[in-house]
Image 1 (tube, rainbow, N blue to C red):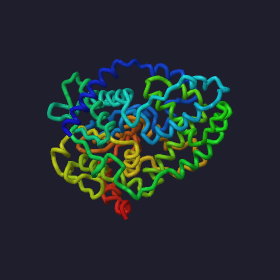
Image 2 (cartoon, rainbow, N blue to C red):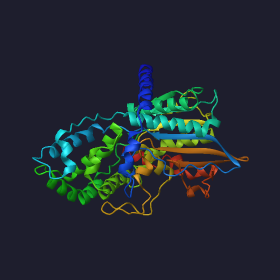
Image 3 (cartoon, helix red, strand yellow):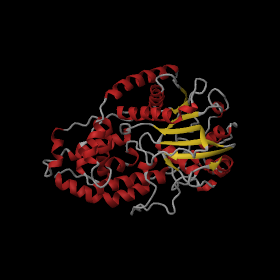
Image 4 (cartoon, rainbow, N blue to C red):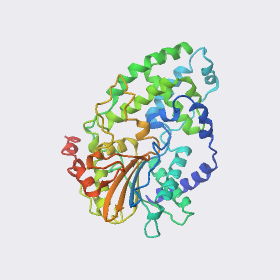
Length: 441
């Protein structure tokens, strides 16, 4: 593990030099693709680059933040190996056409697919580094040489490298006065509160996403097949080709030509696929979704109250029992995770509840369940412990959007009394009310 951490650190240092040298081509060039009535980069669901959903709000003047608990998704990555295989299949069909009747497809005559799989891309490394800089700036009053952030990461390489990019950004922002380290890597083959791998009986979102794909995919496939005679593109291929817009854009730090193949309306349809996926995979639409976030919630409660972790679900009890691998006296905690796990944590906490489950055939334009707002690349939830006079409170932000926390009596300022917040987390404190056992029955 020590050798792997050294390699990770060296990679991170190399990345910082190259990433900092990269211009803002993606941001500059994207002005042309976001000048439409909607922001294209924010229509890519879980593949959207990070953006703040709202402007961060300071606590009331009589209050001050005394602890910050950060959980953050890894930065932008290449497609997973499974998604990559489907992309290659779709591309081979589109590129087999005898000719192209639409000018937007002409680039395919000299196109070569060159994306990797699974790994963090330089743009994603920069996202994580910028987050570290931001968090130092926002919470610098909590830091001194005896109080450095305590940092953990789930065991995927892209998650580990996101953590070390974050620590480097934190260090850079402090002029290298404060240099936090990645202290704990949680194996994804063992108990891990930062990965959704511990509920084998949990279902998937394939039924709902497939139903939606069969609703919006055929017209797009028909259009592409007319523009590329002989391609025989299917609805499944349509999703893969749409995904090339975000994947190539973040990988090459410039807008992909695939972004020009689809309309705003079609990207909105693509976005809804991600919304459905997150809701029915580890969100409220999955009976065993919220329970997968219980372990982290119980760790969060331990940090907020300064009391030992009480949990019988995903926690690694050996690590959580040690003050070295799970200290209870830090002012900043930073954990690095995956999007599906963060969705499980949101739902275990009770955030983003829906009056009605999303319809797999008809999007609600007024929905607040938007994957791009919940888990874009480098998404983060921050739970602040706030002192107001002699009373302690909790505030929760998701991508800088202050959460209402009605379930524990918060007002417009988002402040919830610490005791009320702890009490509101009965589902987690009761180990998921028996749901965790259902993962294995």
